[in-house]
Image 1 (tube, rainbow, N blue to C red):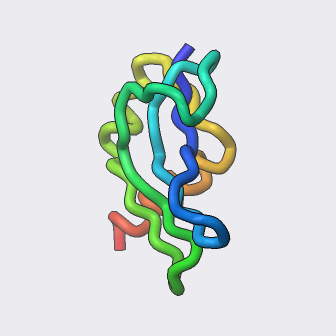
Image 2: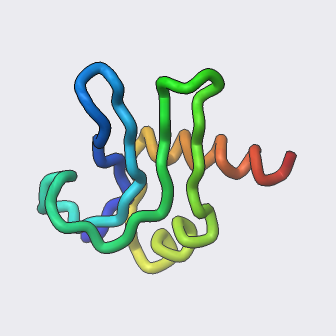
Length: 82
């Protein structure tokens, strides 16, 4: 089963997350299927950049989004509308 989740990048005390599509049985750091965006919580205001169309395409194919990614997708959709 495919999942859309965060993959941590960045250095110590400076987290940066990539929003990726990967196999659920693998760890977040293992091979990914596709990178669809990123999230930078340290910037003020926080930066959320996700390709919502690609995320929706993957969800239609059966991928499940993690709780955090689901919330970030909602924020990305709101940013697109504004």
